[in-house]
Image 1 (cartoon, rainbow, N blue to C red):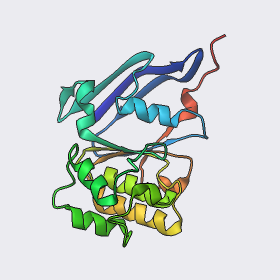
Image 2: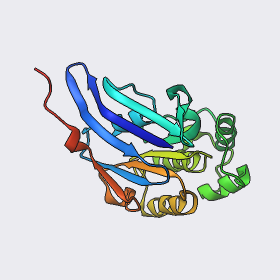
Image 3: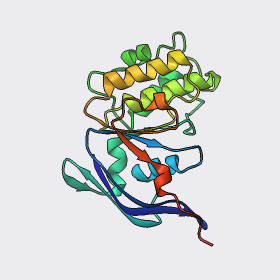
Image 4: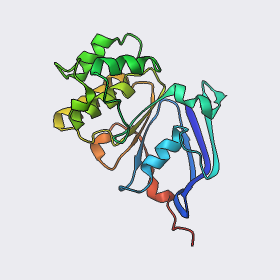
Amino acid sequence: MRIELEKVGKRFRREWIVRDLNIVIEPGKRYAIEGPNGSGKSTLLRILSGHLTPSKGKINFFYQNKPLDVDQVYQHLSFAGPYMELIEELTLVEALRFHRRFQSFLPGMDEPQLLDLLSLPGTSSKLIRHFSSGMKQRLKLALAICSDTSLLLLDEPTTNLDRQGTDWYLQLIESFGRDRTIIVASNVAVDFGFCDERVDILAYKKKPVR
């Protein structure tokens, strides 16, 4: 997917979170959105996903060189962030099946393979509400990375992961991130070490309007 942002800005009340964003996201490239906590990284990801409408400027989406309506963007992307909620009343297996009703897994990926990939033995029938924060983050990442989408958006992907979990995440990217557009928002270098392009969110910050 190709995304073009032309002088895009987002304001909440009187505060501009980002302003004058002129960025082109090219298909198949990997981008890191860098900046301190509260600088607007998550806001930019939500704009890129079509979930937030810019307060100013224009954003255009293209899929296979054809314009894509913002209402159709969700079909081509997957998103994982620590603030995104899972349905905690479901078991792990039920969560996988529920997700698959809305988004297909990558070709050749089935339920047993995904369970094995998660590396959470003995949890297939366990309610998600009883998962640790690290287990929940693994599930969010696996659902996003293993979905059959061309655009992958990851917000602070190693939040709540230990060293083993971080290595697991990087292996997922290595195995399933090829030929996909990947955008990672984080201020932790290990999260986006595989990215070739950098976007410094502070370059698009201005003082609040008085």
